[in-house]
Amino acid sequence: MVSKQTRFWILIGLVTISGFSQGMLLPLIAVILEQNGISSSINGLHATGLYIGILISSPFMERPLQRVGYKPMIMFGGALVIVSLALFPFWQALWFWFILRVTIGIGDQILHFGTQTWITATAEKHNRGRSIAYYGLFFSVGFTLGPLMTNLLAFGIYVPFIISSSLSLIVWLFMIWVRNETPEKDLTTAYGTSSIKRFAKAIRLAWVAFLPPLAYGFLEATLHGIFPVYGMRIGHDVNLLSLIIPCFAAASLFSQIPLGALSDRIGRKKVILTVVAGGIIAFLAAALFESSVIALFATFALGGLFVGSLFSLGISFMTDLLPKDLLPAGNILCGMAFSVGSILGPFLSGFFLDLWPNLSFFYVIVTLLIIVFAATVYKKDPDAAAFQHT
Image (cartoon, rainbow, N blue to C red; front, side, top):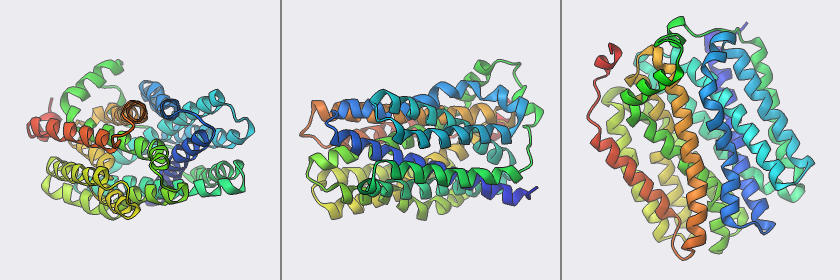
């Protein structure tokens, strides 16, 4: 069996390949549906399938984790993703693809809940932000590479799906050599057996920490699922769009670790406010200069440097605010917040394009970031030590 450090990097590898698959699916299917004449609103609704799967599966994670441990949960989630990706080329029906997206969402949530809880439960407090930043960093690596698979459509619709499924299988097989562990008893049995009580307490203590994952989900789904449609409509080439989109995730690679380490030193709230303000400026610039390909490359990169780390910053913030017995509930709520944002993103942006085709859809992103900034300012600085004793 592998060491704890090797296990950490295997878990990070699974997160990377998951990011790759998600980063591929959103723009790839959006382009295929747009080329087949599907409206942007239907395209946006279809993109929510992945996140509906995440949302509906989230409340049922804690008890299976307690019973079977981390490894079986992670392997089951990974298997769902691998099989679903392999099935896409076999039947090109809108409803069938939607079911596969939902199934991938369920598998991804199981995989992410297992890996995320395992990492947060075993990370040392003094470098927690850095450890979780690696989680976000390598998810972003996968997301950066995923959209490039759109270019492989020229070789056949099955090629991107088969490559993604095969890569996922290779990484998944490394879990065979990982020793299973189960959560500490107090991680899953506090506050009786009611998940509702744990969720309610986690929300009361750490609601502000769930806003960054929600915003990141909104951004991720909108930029990957709707921007390709919008970009083609304002005259940009689809191959150029497949290069612009990864700039967001690629730029975040350079800021994830520094921001995580900085948040360990000066606090999560200050860092979150700073990056959200930077994101507002970046996407306002994108709205003003969207006709320029160079400007879009620059603003996507600037946006990624700032708000590309929101998910990992939110997880770190949540881990600071909650006592250890509420970490599984907190991790589930982070995933649910991410999925809610991911559902709202394509849904609102798609209808925005239909209702106001002459306005830049980047204004939807700016509005969300302003709301997150205001809510974070409004929340008083938390006393983490007090929370630990509630």
